[in-house]
Image 1: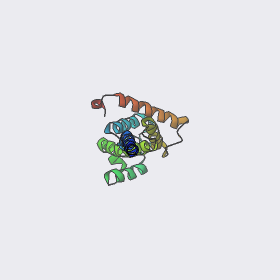
Image 2: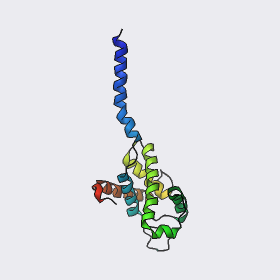
Image 3: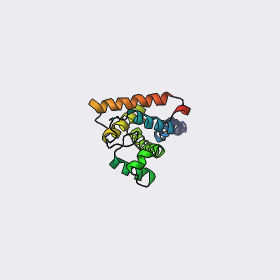
Image 4: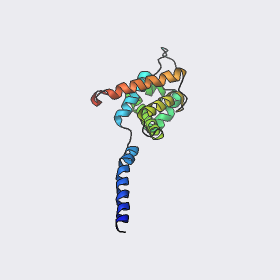
Length: 161
């Protein structure tokens, strides 16, 4: 009779220790390297209209109305499109902040599937929705982001932007 409770206790301990790495993995934050790779991928994949007055700002081609909310969220103050356009460091800071938020959301939604998370975040970046980028221009864009992201992730950490 004594063996049965001890056996159950040992099984519980083994199962708990076996699940511990899964719990730790599920709670790990997005790394700075992942954020930097995604930010750079979004920059590289940004559609270039060849029109200097296209209504989009910075190398990431951000809309003015989007910029207002993002800068309030990330900087606790609103930036003008000109401030965003003329200060690449601030632009990267805001884009990094929003990218971290969206990648984190997608990592949770995809059970830490990195490429699925990048796809979802790229689709959201282009359309405002995590899904629906499986054909046409948006599909091409998402594929470009994934390709650039993978290129960035394959570089040694010291060489990433």
